[in-house]
Length: 373
Picture 1 (cartoon, rainbow, N blue to C red):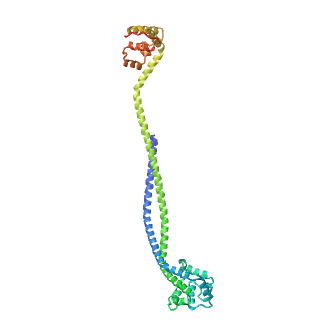
Picture 2: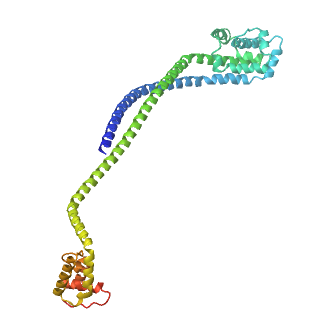
Picture 3: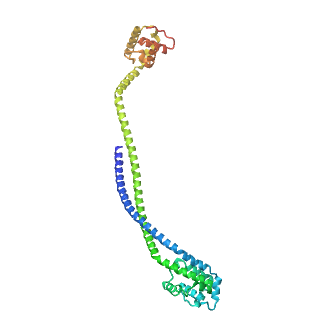
């Protein structure tokens, strides 16, 4: 068991060294990643702040878009069809259509405008679509500059009341053109903010991706450390069980040695008993013969005479080569020391004659005649 324990202790030492190394790596990586995590979180907060600012700016300008779409929504398709049916529209109507055509990036003459209004529903849908962010940024600056300088900023020409007098639907479209121009200014103004926000967001996403990879590696190292620690726990438990088994075995061995030492003297007695029993077995025939004679004839005789009889019988048996003990005793042959001791406790005297009388009384097949010693 000891070699096995030493082997387990060696394996445990190797695993513990691995745990220390891997744990140090994990702690180092975690500390490094923790610093990068703080930076990424700061960048994320900055990106969120820029996003909130851009969204606030857009939200402030959104009513302009809503008003533009609302103005277009007031125009009926039938009204566009009526304008298209004119051979020559009023000057104020034509003024508005020129602005629309500039927004579309097309020629501003009547024929081109008339052709654009060929499908009234589609024409109105185009106006609404142009009010969306992704389309507003596509409007050319040159066209917008012309629209503002030549039309919208010329208050004498661009008079909504006069336009409404000429055509109410034209006024609604004029309001759409005005709102679109105002929104484009705001949209253009916040573009650097949106760009910065997008760049910061992209930067944060890239940093978060890198951080996620590093966090994954830290997790993997920590998981490896956890598995090693579990292995250490199992090895410690196994080692403890082995140590317990060794201690238990050593204790059993100690007790066994003690028992062997204690039984050494007992072994001598057992050896002597075996020798005695061997002799008794060898002399069993003569001893039983004499025991039978005692049971048959002893009852009426005194202890001294019994002794003389057994000595004579023993001598005769030995002379005739009958295996017999040299000193015969009836209690040794037919008596049980435990039973005789019980008789003594219950009142039978402890002398040899009384013990013989007890054996005669218990062994004879007929009532024996026994004298009181």
